[in-house]
Length: 528
Image (cartoon, rainbow, N blue to C red; front, top):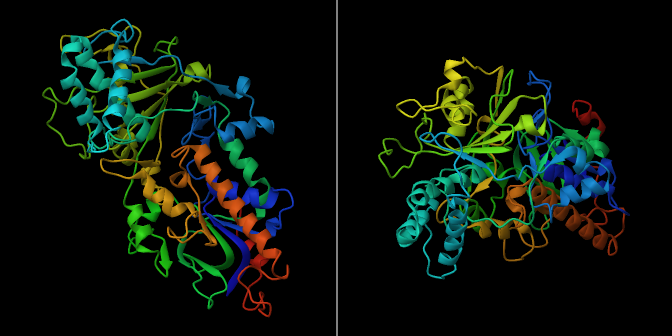
C-alpha cells in the first residue's frame, strides 16, 4: 500500500531540511507540514553536520562534520542565523585566522614564514597557477605537477628556503579538498574566498534543530531509499519512492538530497539509488566528472596544554616526495607519519579549558584512521611533537618531548565519515581532468535540454549542486532554498490554472486517495 504526500524529501541533511522548512514556513505557502515527508537513511538527522556532546572527557562539544562559516561576506546561513537571533558572533563564533604556524620535522620551532618570505612565494604560486590556466590550451595537471612547473620556471628567483619549503606548504590544499596533492586538479586548485572564515563555537546542531522544529512528526529516520520510480508521460500521476523495508511513498514533488557519493554508485551496489526509468545518460555521465574527498578529524584531549597557546592553528608539513621519499603509493592502506601534512586547530584557545587539539586529515590518511581509530595517536604523535613549545630535535631530527615526559592523551575521538555507507566521505573534490560544471548543470533543473528538464518535479539539492558554496554548509542550505522556491512557484502557478483541490499532474476526475494508506499510521513508527 502506498502512502500519499505532496512533497517527499530524500535526506535530512542541511539541504533537505532547509527545503522542507522553506516549503512549510514561507509566507502564503500552499503547503502545511502534513504535506511534506522527509525520509532519512540514518538513525539521526543532520547529514554531514554532527555536533557531539557525549564523547568528550573534558565536557566539551565538537562538530565532527562542518565547523566553520566560510565566506562570511556571502554566507546565507550566518546572515539568517544572526537575523533570527540564533547566532551571536561575539559569543558563538571565533575568527581563527591568525597566520598559521608551520612546523617541520627537521627544524626546531615554527618556520618564520614572513621573515623567509615563504607566504609571499605561496601567494605567487597561486597567481602563477591562475595565469597558467587562463590559457585556453592549458592542459590540466596535478597540484603537485603545477607547483613543480613554477619551481622550475622561477628557480633563479627563489631562495634555498623558499625552494625547500614552499612546495610542501602548498599541500595545505589537501586539508581543504580532502585528497592527495598528486590527485588535486591544478586547474581548479586555487580558491578565492568571499570573506573570512568564522569558527562555529556554538556547534551547528542549532541550525539542524531550527530547521527541523516545524517538521518533527514529518521526519522518518532509518528509512534508506532504494528505488525512485519517477512519473513519465501521462500514465503516471505521481513519483513513487520505495525504501529498503518496502515502504512506498507517492508524491507530486521529490527533492533528492543524497550525496554525490551515493549518486555515483553502480545500480548493483548495496547502497545505490535505483531509478526507474533510468536517469538520462548525460546525467549519469556527469556524475563521473567529479570525485568525493575524505576530509576527516581526529580530536585529541589532554590533561594539560603542552603546545603554544599563542597560536590558533598549526600545519605540520610532510616530507618532500621529490627527495628520496617515494617508497610508498598514495593509495597505500597504511600511510606513515610525515607522508602527509596535517592541519591542527588549537581548540583550547577557542574553548579555554578544553585542553584539546582538532586534527584535520586527508585521503588516504582519513580512510586508514577511520578504519583503525586505535592507531590515531600512534600515527599523529610524531607529527604533533613538532608543535611543542619546548620540543628539541635528537640526532635524527625527531622531537622527543612527548615521549620523554610520557604525555598521553586522555581521549581520542576519530570521525567515521568514510565508513558511513550513506555518506562515504566528506564532500566533492576535483581530481585531474574533472569538470565541476557538468554535474551542476545537470542537477540545477534550470535547462530543458539538461538533466530531467527545467519543468521536472524532481529537484536536486546538496552541496554538490551548489555553484557557490560547494562543499560548505551554506552551499547546501542555498540549494535547499532553491529547490523549495521552485516547487512553491510551480505549485502556485499550477493552482491558478486548475482546481485547487487537485494536485499537479492529477486529472480533474482522479481520486487522489485511492490506494493510499493512512500517513498517520505510517508515522507512528517514525521518530524524530
